[in-house]
Image (cartoon, rainbow, N blue to C red; front, side):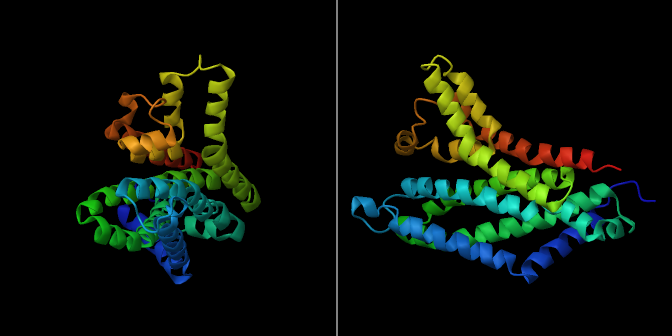
Length: 275
């Protein structure tokens, strides 16, 4: 019995998972969705001010941040919630585990294949906007916009990792889908409202750095701060200037927090998936 971890085995599973997503056009559909929404926001986001087209690179990226926070976590959760529990319900999990492959190789291979599909669809979906921004603001825009797209991919991987954990813990697909949607509501809609409610209810006494550091407990907020805090206009636009301390705006610290949001749920899933 194979007890070690072999990258070749996990890579073969990842390649199969990725090919399946290409074959059923999942990558194409998601890329088209990203392209349509991102182009609409880029061109018509300033329509209220009587202008069509991108006004500035910073404000365009700030507008796209809102799109990513709502859309990418939802897509990642829907992509990964049945990665394990779906195989279990179809009866194919036992067949896979009967092969000379460990449970860890199976889990990592599944996650890697889904992560590649999610990353490809995200990058392809935002590629058209990159062409528009380079034509409008020059080649320097590509580096800034590339960082934004890279962080969007990391956000997607963090929620895909959470979805994988849900898929391992859930009894069936119905429970897994319910938990995935609940996670989206908590992290995307409820978390910030609770923090704001605490600030208002306490008259600002519970505010300060403590509440600001709680933003690290939400990968969506980590992504938001990572992308908008360095821009003065955008900080005022999002109201972050008076809430987030400068120490929290360190890109390496924020990148480390995002890395933990990818690794820790996947590690918990691997621990729970043991026989």
